[in-house]
Length: 244
Image (cartoon, rainbow, N blue to C red):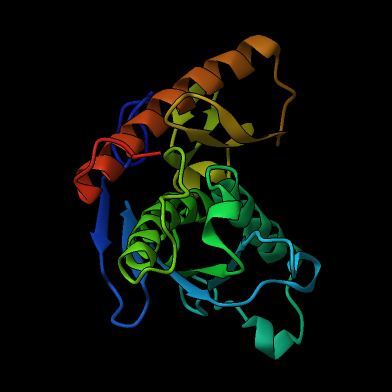
């Protein structure tokens, strides 16, 4: 099958991660995944949600949003609607959960690390790009906290990245752009660590049900793509692992 942009079925879109993209955030990146572009920042404050006060543990939480003209049709801001829509809330929880899973929150003390992901241009895969970019921003924020003496040891235990897979016209494909995602028979988002452990598997039969054999094929395809993204994260960060 020839894909819209000429890629192979198992090929990621071109990925670029630009570190230190914002002046004031402790960690920030611009991640480009094909024509999808997301600004991810990580910053911290010396307080935690009420349920964690006096527990000697911290928290990581995320906010996600799409700028009004990040897509072809203008998207109304949440502030104009007066509430966060269901999709935004779901993605925010996914980003926060993905990063908390690889972070020892007891090592950051009574602090909250805020992850902000703003989509400035959307062409499919915004949530997976946000997770992949946000992890790099988190690493830089943690490094800044260590330099400032805020924390003593690195709380991050593993790399994490995310990608999408799907079945398009009967063919399993990796990293769907918008035109593919909107017409796919099966759509799946995967979040995984560099040790090959899954944090999230979101799979939906959009037009047809899928078998266990289909799922196994999609998981293998997605795993290979995520490991490729993690190698890029390592190259961008110029490190090969963490001192746990």
